[in-house]
Length: 328
Image (cartoon, rainbow, N blue to C red; front, side):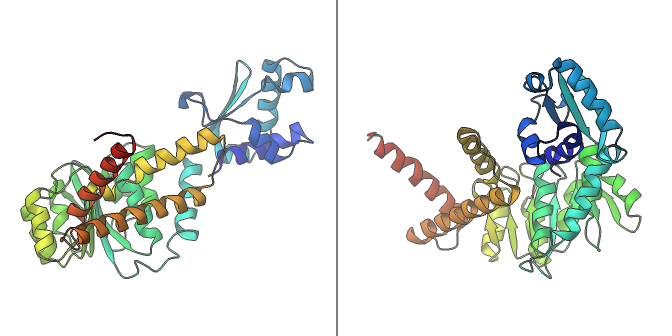
């Protein structure tokens, strides 16, 4: 959801002839989320409208609330010290996510026919699910520290987001949305679920040798680490001996740091990229990481060993930077 655009459309009748795009430029994201999801500082408008900022915020607040549709998107709109603060409702976010998952995601068939198991249900796990779904795969299991859910029809991502991001409840609440799904106590059992791709996104050392053998026995083809070092050395050895494509954490979960760097670039340029632009840039970065790791592994006689390749590529990058700065 574009909160700025939504707010701008409700403000436009009162701020004409300013366009929605121009109003979006006036809006800002508060540093403290307690002050709203998006806010309009009314101080610059004071000169144009010949009113005190507090009065402008008060009048705009009343005008927006008079539009019935605003209540469908914003659960609260308030004026505070010359600012007009908008709070997006959880219901609007959930509906937006459902629409996004159905209409914009799943169009790719790269992962068609593949089943995915993801441990965890925090940020990494939730958005790993979203990306897997975007690529056409079906996520059948997710977990938290209490246990895991299994949904043969595919995990309803919008329901998980509602439970974890909005309600802050345990994953077992998923059965209230989908009674046909299964809930099992104990999070380690998730690795006994048959899948093509396993994405450990919960915690360190969650996949041990026994869990790795269970995954291999069930035909897993690829494992990519979303958490920090979620696979023990013994588990990694099992994957490598059995020809499982293994993406180590230092490479596979580099997306968070990469996106932070992209955000810093935007801030430095005083520019804002769209979601699609950021996603495309991130994809290029991740593809580059894979090629660098694969190339380094092959050059040093360990073809297809991405663990060694990622270590070597990372070391070489730091070493070359040090040499460029004159360090011997």
